[in-house]
Image (cartoon, rainbow, N blue to C red):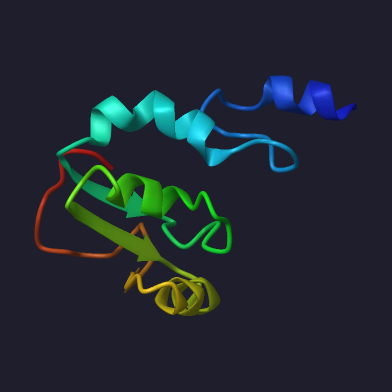
Length: 101
């Protein structure tokens, strides 16, 4: 299967891992997260990227909670000044609700 065929099969909000920007999919969801409370599951993914999705969400919402399972990703986020909650999306309990998950 070629790269183009793989990219065509992916979800429209999932960028190509080889040559796309997170800005593309962020533009698609921006109206949903702007100004609302957001729970970002897997928030540490891509923490090394200049267009880290979690930071893009935080740029338009003051109420963002990131949950991450990987201690390495949590450490990487912390190095960028972002604190994430360590937990598994299946059983993490935050004691509140969110507008967008």
